[in-house]
Amino acid sequence: MPDRSMNILEKRDLIVSLNTKGLIDSISEAETILEKTLQEELDFRSKNGDYLPGRSEDCQAVKKRLNELAMQAPKNSEGKKMTVEETKVWLEKQRTDDKELSEAIQKQKMAEFVSGDFCIKIEMGRSKLNDLRAILALRAAQITFFAGDVRTILPLEAEIKEGAQH
Image (cartoon, rainbow, N blue to C red; front, side):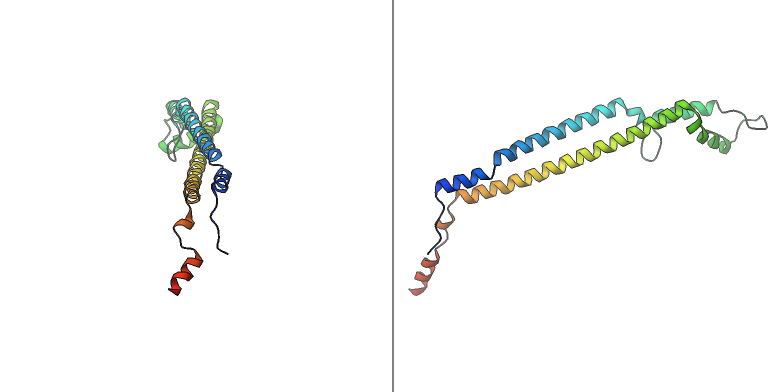
């Protein structure tokens, strides 16, 4: 017995079961979440720009405080101006001793953490959005396939056998 084609109601039920509307709603939601996260990151960077460091260096707020402290560096044990090396060592110690510098360093660390968290959220949001769009493309192909009647373009097994006998 040859396979039969699906009738229009069976096709409709199958296409409805793919829940394409729900998928489109999920894409819209993911786009909204990603846009919100990008806006929050921009707002965060705007408000905390002084505490966001460059690559492998201190942020502007920490550099500013270090420069202020360098100008206030005490004299060495001989009563002379400290050497560059002595000043470096003294400034390094100030990272924990100087309250204002210590607070700036803590804010810098928090800003780096939050910035990294935003990067992760944005990357995950983009990935989710790409995945949802790929699923939508698959669903569109499935709908196109099910909307057509494959049996009208492919010969039935019986037709093939009948053609071979002639």
